Amino acid sequence: MPTSTSFTVPEYEISFDTMRSSGSGGQSVNTTDSAVRGTWNISKGFIGTPDEKARVIDFLQKHRPSHIKTNDDGDILLVAKSQTQKSQLQNKGHVLDRMHALMHEALAIRVKRIETIPRRVKRKLDRKRLDAKSHTARIKKLRNSSKID
Image 1 (cartoon, rainbow, N blue to C red):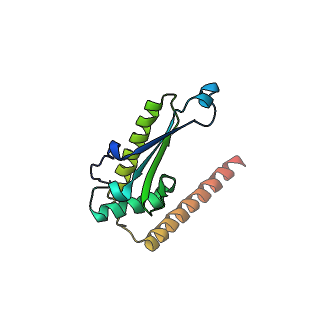
Image 2 (tube, rainbow, N blue to C red):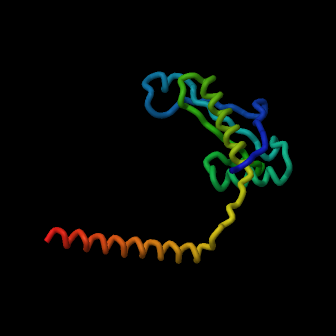
Image 3 (cartoon, rainbow, N blue to C red):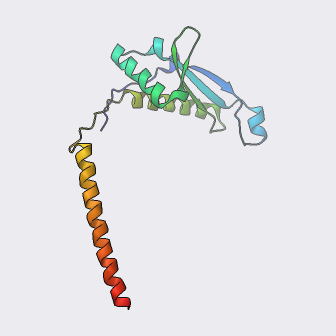
C-alpha cells in the first residue's frame, strides 16, 4: 500500500487562464469563458527535499505526461484543465482538486513487491497444474461420451 506525504499546492502560486470550452453545450459554450487551466511551476514552487522533487517530476513524466510542460526557462510546470461545469468557479475548484490529487499520487512512496516464488519456478508449477486439469477434463469427457452410446 503506497504511503505519501501530505502536500497541497498553494493556490496563490497557480496561474489560472480562462478560455471557451470545446465540445457540445450549445450557445453557452461559444459565449462564456468557463473552461479553466491552471499552471503551477514545480521547479520554483515545490517546497520539499530535492529527492521528493525528483520523484514527483519523474513520476509525472512517466505516468502523467499530459500534465507536465516545460517553459522557455527550462522550468517544469504542472498543468491541469477543467471544462466540465458551466461555472468558471466550479471548474477552478476541479483544477485545484486535480492538482492536489496529482501531487498526492506523485509523492506516494510505493513499496516494491518481493516475489515469494521465483518466476521460473512459478511458471513450472502453473504448467504442471494446468496439465493436471487438462488431464482430468479429458478423463471426464471420455466418461460422458461412453454413457451416451
